[in-house]
Length: 321
Image 1: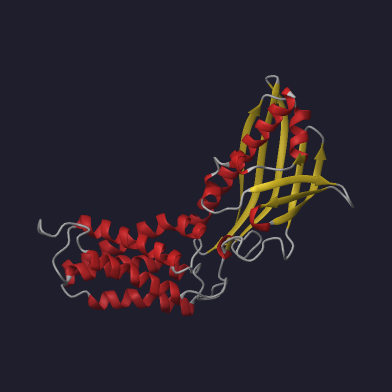
Image 2: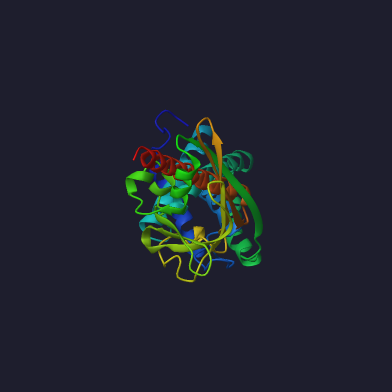
């Protein structure tokens, strides 16, 4: 590439790549679990590669690209592609943010592949057409319900300068959670509705009642109740627990792709205070669990840490009276 054609001066190739991605996203706008869902592996893996290849192919028609351009320009194009899906309201903020890193890497892979094809064949148009058609071909062949369940647990722990009886009171009666109390949670900053309350009721058996922002509400059927020592529950979601639009369909709790199973809190006396440990079981079911499980661990790990800090602040404040 000559000095007169530096990376990112090729605006049209980047825009063309982003547009190709948006077109593919429109094609994969089917319902959750369908062949044409945006959660289909054919789309998640191949669409960003196609974006990268289109970007470099268009640029190569003007002048040979450097390897740096083959990496950087497709990365930018996939970013614009994801942004475009937000602007035209076909993708939710949570999904867009968590998928962007994977798309960026795959876009750069596609750019490098096209760079190699341009240098080896000198006429890579058939390669471009094949890659562009491959997501659509696989989308029509691979069932959207061909998902693999992966069961995992996430655990976090925090020492609290308060006796177990005080911490226990906060675990079972946590009303009126304010936004400022969970502001450190980056999961909430990207669109996950923040918690509002967690109250233990006893009508017909002990049940933990939870409320979150955007009208989300659900229960936890308590399976272990050892005051000041241990509490555990399994999650129970009703049909109206998550109102339409409260969460991206792809990350809907209790949905096809993600679910929460249970949570366990253990309290152990330590150094004049209490060691509080939270453990949560969950499921991810996708055609790319290696990535989805990593994202779930980051999100749930952050949420767990923020909740522990919330219990700590309230317990310490309650102890001081």
